[in-house]
Image (tube, rainbow, N blue to C red; front, side):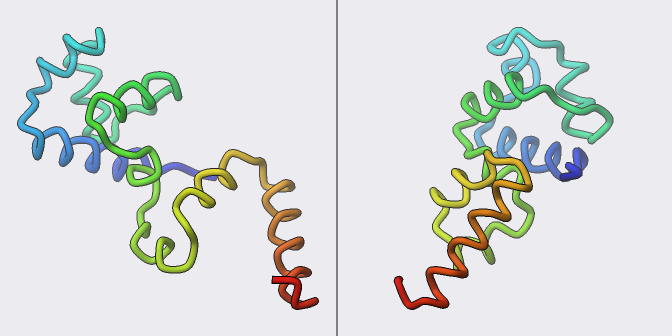
Length: 110
């Protein structure tokens, strides 16, 4: 899975601004540099998972919403909680789950 850090950064920045939080306030609270936040919001750096989780928690935004470009469309077809469970698995496990669901539907179990 390739992550588009530019879009991730834009979503984080948009949420930060909507919540009227400055980069300085965010940096101080999370104990990271303003420069790092700026690079992140401009898509010029990646982010490690622990920092990403802390930032999302601080901004009170779902990781799902930040990572998923087309979340409105997916929500129509798949429960958000189910999606969050499935994306934790590697591709092989995801394919296994998909095939199991297909089989259940085919056999009219669900």
